Image (tube, rainbow, N blue to C red; front, top):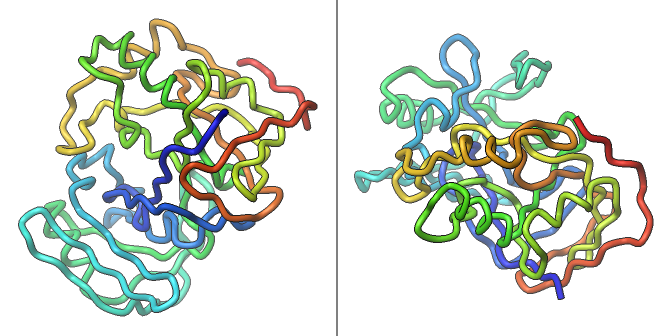
Length: 266
């Protein structure tokens, strides 16, 4: 039996993750996931590639009340009800991505932590890396994490928090989820069509508890997974919701017998 073993969301892109026991998947993924994102003063995306210790900042976001709290490693916190400015013509991974500036104390606190001026934006449909390409859901198996850990020479299976995936699953062989690209997959009450694999970046080399580099995940991937079906150095897959529904820890994962489309190789 294939089951959901972890659910992870990031209310603020690149900051710490939260781990709900259940979520409601909608057309744009999970309401509140990657709801906020940051740029530097020039408008360039600012994430934990540029500051690994951002993962130590813990966000709490209430989608209904609009309450946002950021708790910093030094014990300080900023909290309040989010107010939004006018829509701004921002870009996200090279594409137009209109967002609204967040009014309140959070920008100053994040800027002080980063040591440079940062801008905080609200993304109405979530700032997911592959959201412009139908990638509002991501998934990786525990077996794939364990296999990569072995190749990298890690002392234990790699913690899935490194990869910031929406769902982690148990009950399959290493990288078996790659074969789900092009298929409809039922996860709990929802159905997803997986569109491609996820090429990894340097963030995955960071210890999720410290934000510091401790495992060369990219070198390990290059030794046995240099090319993927859609992206190089892949681990895990992404897709889009085709039937909304609730997903809980322990829910079963069911694979459709036929493909929606043929998966190609790079």
